[in-house]
Length: 208
Image (cartoon, rainbow, N blue to C red):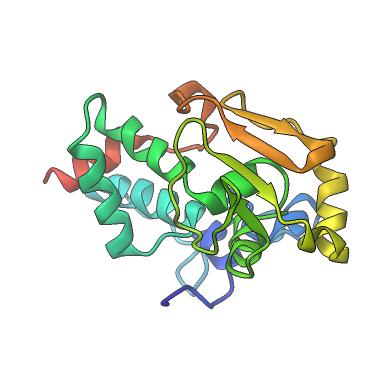
C-alpha cells in the first residue's frame, strides 16, 4: 500500500500550521513549525502572492495530509460525498472523520493519526466484535470499537489506554475508558469536527 514516508514536519511547515502528525513532539519546542515557521525549501521564506487556485489547492492538501489520505483516495471520498444528500464539504469531512484510524485517534488511543493507523494495521482493535486491520474502514452509527483483549497486555497499548482515560472524545463518540470500548452514537456535525479546513474551497477546486 502506498503511503508518505518522508519527513512529516515538512508537511506542517508547508501548510503553515500544526497538523499534529508527530503526536507528542508537536506539543514541544522541537516542533518544526515552532522552530521554523516558514515553508521548506530554498524559496520558503520568500513572499508569494497566492492565486485563488492556490488557496483552494492548499486547503485540499491540508485536509489530505491531516487525515493521511493519498490523492486518488481523497478524490474517491469527494465523489462519494458529492453523491450524498446535504452539503458536499461537510459530507467529505464526515467521511474522513468516520475512518477507523481517525476514530482511534479521536479516542486518544493513538498519539497521532499515524500511530493510530499503525495500531489498526497491527490488528489491535475490533469493530462489533470482529478484528479489523483496515485503517480506512468506515464506521456507522451504532458500531462498537474496542481494544482486543490480547492487545491490552502490550506496554504501548496499555500506556495509551491510561492516557485515554483522561481524554475527552468528541460528542458523537461514547467512550468507556475502563473497558477500552467506544460506540458511534451519531454522525459528526460540522461544529464537532475541529479540523481547521475551509471545506468549501475544496469543493470549488474539484468543481473547476
